[in-house]
Image (cartoon, rainbow, N blue to C red):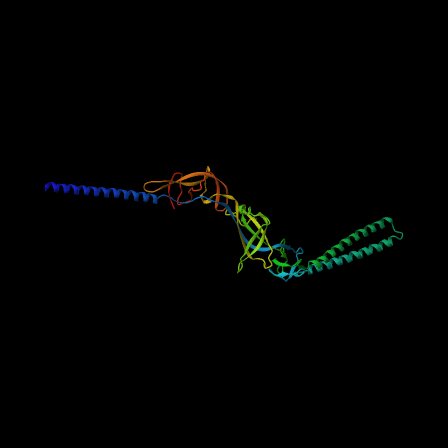
Length: 377
C-alpha cells in the first residue's frame, strides 16, 4: 500500500512539472511573439508598388478667357478734349460709326489765325510785285534783283503756309471724330468726356470679330512640347450648360512674364499655347478649358515618380527584400541606383535592373536607409 501511494505521488509530481514546463514554454513563446510584434510596430511603415507595363501618358491642360483673335489699337494724336463719348466697352459698332467726338475749337481758331497770316503774306507779295513794276521803269538793276529775291522767298513762305492750313483742314476733317474702321466690338475704352486722351495709350481697342476667336493658356513646358501646331483640341466652354467646341493649336511660345508663373516666381517652366476657335455663338469673355491625354512611345516598365529619390551620387529607389522567419516574414529596404530615361506627370522609365515583380517603395512614414528593416503598409 505504501509503495502504491509513493508511486501516485511521483506521478502527480511529474504531471505538475510537465504542466509548469508547458506553461513556461508557452509564456516564453507568447512573450517572444508579442515582443516581435511590438518591435515590428515600431518599424518604419512603407507603401510599395510593383512596376507596370504601359506607355507614358502625358496630360496637357490649360484654361483661360476667350478673346477676339485680332484687336486693333486706335490712338488720338491731336491731344484734343473728348467732347462726346458715344460708345462703351462691350458695344458692337459698324464700320464708319462715330465712337468719340473731339472738341476741335482750338484747331479751328488755329486755322483761322493761319489763314489770316496767309492773307497778310499775300498782301506783302502784291506790294513787292507793285514795287518791282515801278522800279523797272528806269530803276537800278541791283534794286530790282533784290525785290525779285524777296518775292521768291515770300512765295516759298506762302507755299509753306498753304500746306500748313491744308494740314489743319485735314485734321479737322479726319480727326474731329474717331470712327470705327471696321465692324467690331469695343474691347477697351480709354476716353472720358471733358478730358484729353491719355498720352501713349490707345483710346479704343477694337476687336475684329470677322477674324474669329482665340484662347491663350499657360501650360507646363514639358507638356506643351507634346502639342503639334495645327492639331485639333476640344475646348469646354464654362457656361450655365457647358458645351464643347473645336479649336486648333495656332502657336506655342514662351510664356510672358507674369503669366502662369512657376512656384519659384518665374515663367521659364511654362509655355503660352494659343488656340484659335471659330464658333458663331461666342461673344467674348467666356471661360474655357481643355485637357488632352497623349500616350508616348512603346509599353515599358513604369515606376511611380514618387519612388525616385536623389543624393550626391545620383538617382535611386528603395526595393523590398523579403526573408522568411519562424515568427513571420522580415522585410528590408535595399537601395538601388537608377537613371530616369523619360517620364510623365506620375510615372518614370528607369534604366537599371528593375524586375516586373519587384516591390518598390513609393512612400515611407519616416526616412529609411539601405538595409533598414521596415513593415509594409
